[in-house]
Amino acid sequence: MTIVLIGAALYLLAAGLLVRVLAHNRQREAWPWLLPALAAVVSHVAVHLVTWRQLGQPDMHFFAALSLVGLGMAALTAAVGRFGRLAALGVVVFPVASATVIAYGLHGPRSATSLDWPLQLHAWLALLAYATLAVAALLALMLWAQERAMRRREFHRWLRALPPLVELETLLFRTIAAGFVLLSATLLTGIVFVEDLFAQHLIHKTVLSVLSWLAFGALLLGRWRWGWRGDIAVRWTLSATALLVLAYFGSKFVLELVLERG
Image (cartoon, rainbow, N blue to C red; front, top):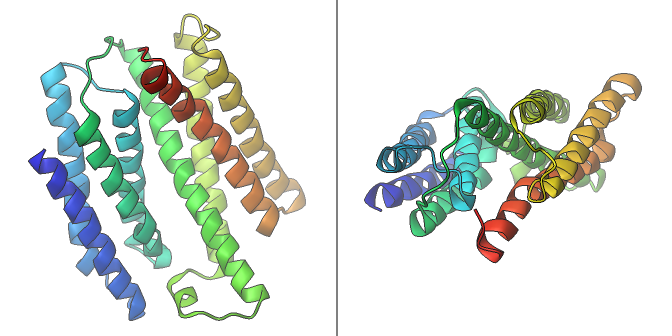
């Protein structure tokens, strides 16, 4: 539990230092917040490695998966935030990652059925896709807030902490494209490696995941063919992400925490 608390505290320290950097409009000064952020990510990784070594296999139950998605979001934020104004993501992502690692420390680990490497590949691709598309959802919210403030001619101080509108929109669609590729690979490996994809405990997850994949695909097509942007992009991104959250974490929550089934 000690390493859990250390990781959580480092995340909160990184978020606090980042707020200070952004408040003084010094986005290029990455080192004050980046060092504790990287240390937090390393501590977060160590939490899972220690647990997996104890269990002899990866732990993929609800809180473990939630923590891994938080870890992926934090790692992506630290990576992209180092090179520009997208560090502002960390103000939200780092506290979220802190909460997920604490939740895992309080509710995990749990023994689970051993998975062979194809199913582990499917699970890891799914977690990477969820983390990437969750970051895309946060970028969409940033885009919405920026456009709303500009339409109302409310030039708040926090706007200076965000990238230019065009840059933010471009990064949003690049992130969605990367997440769409990962989600496509997740569905493909599910079709290939899962013996009974439409078993009773997988049908809702499968249908909602496919609907999310279709929504993200339609958004990327609309961007390429008709130049979709702004509110349209935000609505489609948030709707598709909501479907994905329901597909994975909604089904796991019901199965593991409500019905108490593996």
